[in-house]
Image (cartoon, rainbow, N blue to C red):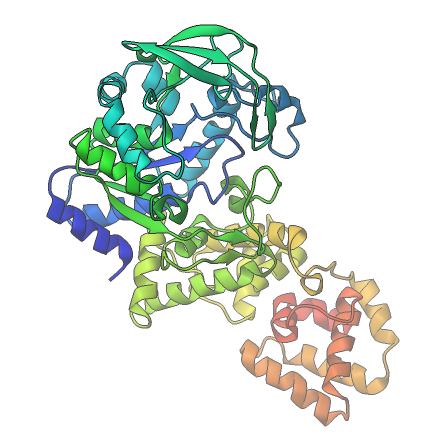
Length: 511
């Protein structure tokens, strides 16, 4: 049983309307890692629908968080360290704010993945009064909340602690305020310089008062999380394992939710993070791939398939061998349409779809080859050449799309042997003319065998048989193939490559 189905079963036992909350910190460029909870949350939504449950998926932009570190390439924002991210200007100048710039793109890209949650802004929840009831409860029960938090802290919070971080009304920063007193829902503070992860946030020295019911600050994260669960009546939430450590965010927030807000904590969906090219995904270090980046090199269904596998296993997205991920997805697709094979893989494939499934299973590497030998506009030839390479019965639109994506991938990340420029007929003929007679005989024979309805597997065997029949070492024949056609000693798999080039071209260069 897939993990999403197991979660849906737990939610069915809980009963009532199901609300799956997801969220993303917008303190940097949103990337595929940030999309983990909302894409996985959508899997739970689908499983709930299949179970006949009333369900809604929501997404909250955590845009009231402080801007702690400047992302790579955005040095113009260094003076905004310590500000709520909602109040930072757009460094690109095309949107009202930093948040608007990145959220618009992120949400638009999610739609391409078939994921369309109801959207909320964390800042707006404070400013429009949506969280006021939860804020008042937190202030009234500040002592109880402090005691809950202190159970998990090495250094206890002081007796006069208040669950509120004011925004300085003078300089606009939130990281630099220190609470000095409270009167009802009004919190006094002083703005002082402080060190945060990205450097020094400079306080302005202002002493002021923050009205907690007018969005002039925010609750601490663990209190805010519980308050949001109560406000939205959240029943399920996916999140990364760092929130699920003993004494971590979920451990404390679920107690606050139950004991302070009287709301049963949501069923957690805890997942392992994945890495990018064997390193941590990080906006500040520039090691990111956004959803838009992914959509430029591979189908959205492939990333969803990757995310919908086992939650507890850490995986790496290695863009240099993206073909491995696509091949795994294609294997599941073949099983789906054949009605046999790995049932778990088929379930994940079905769950990953954006729209109705349409067959393809033309290898990503072949599509990368086709992108370099056929004009993007020549759909007919593209389909014909895929057929010559042994692939039929696929959806033509999907093939055209994958060829375009594979072409983008091979240019940016592909291995050297797979990136080439096909020689013109004259160039290839000149290379061919320089070969010795046995190699010429081999190439001419292979060109003559094209069009005889031979499979790539059989053609691969034929290359070896042809070499032996002409007393040529197979490595020398492979080298001659690549040198003649692309001017390199190595290239794509020879059988697939030759079949995809077509008989007319090869007969012209190997007369």
